[in-house]
Image (cartoon, rainbow, N blue to C red; front, side, top):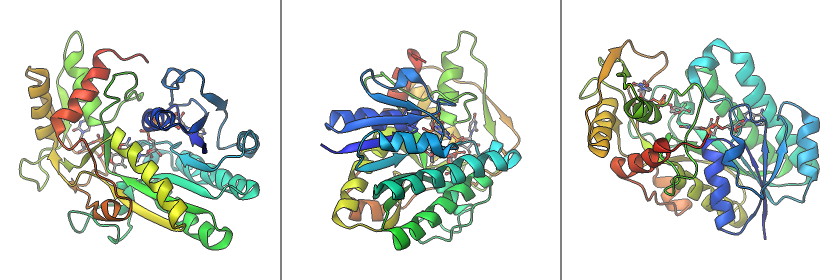
Length: 327
Ligand code: NAD
Ligand code: UFG
């Protein structure tokens, strides 16, 4: 049985990964600082190391716990706006913290790594849909941290033989179809949870739409929404691909379908069967008009097929969680 360390396994995407790994029969250990993660998101019985990537001692202790076959790395600070105001926090946590982890992996001879990268590595796209060979030109420190780690991974492969796959997620969304875990960030900045929280609150207020003057058909930003369970699936495929052909590669993960903010609102109205009010606010700093993935490479090389392609289906799973959030 393969032993996997999941860094950030108490967070939104990491906790879905943990469930999937358990379902597949892997031996799973979680490493998390619980800064933004939730203890309740980790199933009972899973070994948890509380510690921070910022402390090399914490990282070494966790890696010594077992002879891990691979590390899945979700732990990061994730707010684009915050990264602009606090770059030190982002480079410290996302780059220096990851470097601590990678150094400890090399020390321990653990040679397989799957990294949560982001569409933010592309910055403002020159072409849509975005392919992996699009220039990497982040426009905020968060995106730079992802790009820097991808570079470190390429160099660690060449120098130390540490094999990796960087998965560039587009907009992660949805929740465990059984409603056991879901998205819970504080503050919540993501569109879908904000719409659902607003619609389900006792005194529903309008959803804030950041900008309706973008060069898109309805003036609101277009994004590629990809289900969190499809992201988890891609990690399993990525692990298999490292086993079969080690290297340092990066793949886009998206559905290839673009939905505007107003289209997401309309889909949420259909799923909820109610009107959802919104108010238009100024553009949010650093939001590109369009982000849509070309995931052909992941489909071809990782044999990945997103199962949740319909926005309604994605929203239904998110809604199941938001009706009864447990944390
Ligand atoms: P999250 O905040 O829910 O989870 C991150 C987890 O990492 C939390 O449990 C947190 O406590 C832990 N963590 C953070 N810093 C740590 C540290 N220094 N040491 C130990 N643990 C630490 O975030 P998420 O939405 O699940 O995102 C997971 C990953 O996916 C991140 O790397 C993020 O950049 C990437 N990503 C997310 C999205 C998205 O739409 N949510 C899109 C692209 C990429
Ligand atoms: N939006 C609103 N109102 C809200 C929240 C968001 O109008 O309350 C809009 C945003 O302006 C954006 C779209 O909805 O146009 C999607 O915003 P999200 O915050 O849900 O997601 P982002 O596209 O900003 O961010 C995601 C990931 C980041 C990643 C980024 C680019 O969360 O990690 O994609 O890849 F950096």
